[in-house]
Length: 161
Image (cartoon, rainbow, N blue to C red; front, top):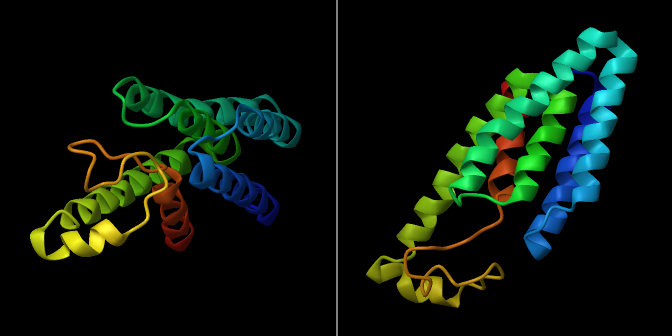
């Protein structure tokens, strides 16, 4: 992975994190711009082979996340974000980021469950929760921006390489 591509992908994830953490939305304009840029870059730099690789990467991000979206686990912006990431990084790194992100999301969910324990409940109630219902009053369903898990997943992906 070249430094230029790494900078572009990092910029995509920083912008997506910013909007997702603030409004729980990843704008279509952002993901479509980066996806189109990734497809164009791969085609210009590697020809039809690069374009095929970018499409495979985009599909590696879109297909599993679309299934998660249909099951109510994540939003549509996350699906498009992983498609854009895949256009730049290809299928292998996209699937690795997906696994790392899901593991991080599981860790976040585990922490939220811990806050429901009687000894930690008071501390959890003091915690500000800007994304929908507070985890201690939401019953079984608590929402958080998936970028809370994708950002550390990306850092883990960088550390692995």
